Image 1 (cartoon, one colour):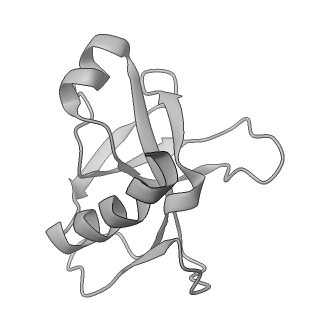
Image 2: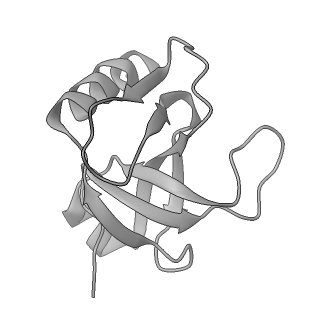
Image 3: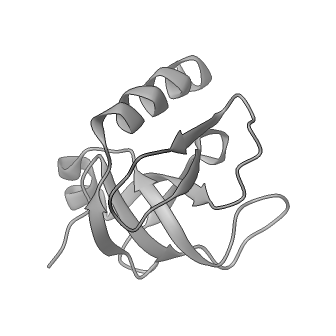
Length: 110
């Protein structure tokens, strides 16, 4: 059984949603460490959009040879039940993306 790990690009279902939350089947980046995800069955994720707008809290995914492109929406960080959200592993995120996401998350949550 796959257990999401920090730095994984995944595909998942974010329905249902409320308000301005991202929704639907989409790619996301796992933020929380695998051990937390394993014991809690929860994971913190940032959705990915293909509609890059250049906002300061977006991290663009560039020069990625894999399937994922667009931007990580750092300001849409949310907790999910990864078993119920049909999480599927796609590929690892580039180190540069993880570094930029971490740098933008820190002032938001600490």
